[in-house]
Length: 152
Image 1 (tube, rainbow, N blue to C red):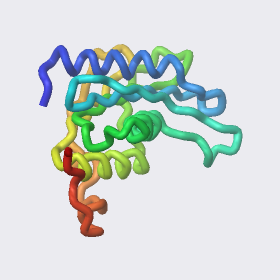
Image 2: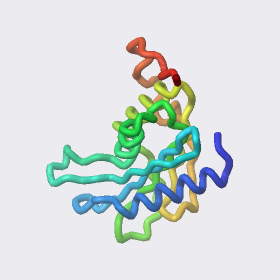
Image 3: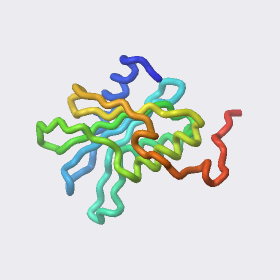
């Protein structure tokens, strides 16, 4: 796992991404940041749609961006920050079920445990989790006989 300054930088990146959320319907903004094994950070934010089922979660946007860069197996840590827009509420937000499943895919394809940090919008409270905490008894690539990606 990473040290505290790396975690704080990852949370700060997720908080910055949260500011770009397109959430006119729910008014609930979420930002996510993914640290890759080389230390680089990729961000995403939620992106709602008037046809609610077409909305995208921040975690999924960030991980899909990582995959588009050909780096899906390089994911090392994820931070998630979210909350009601125009509110001082400091609730700690954890990933939804779909995002947990997408994170499971990333963890299994990376072949190593991912550090998952959920933080309040201010970053004052942080909950460090594992995927096993979030999604026990997960179904993923290994159940289909697919091994982690190998680096060339």
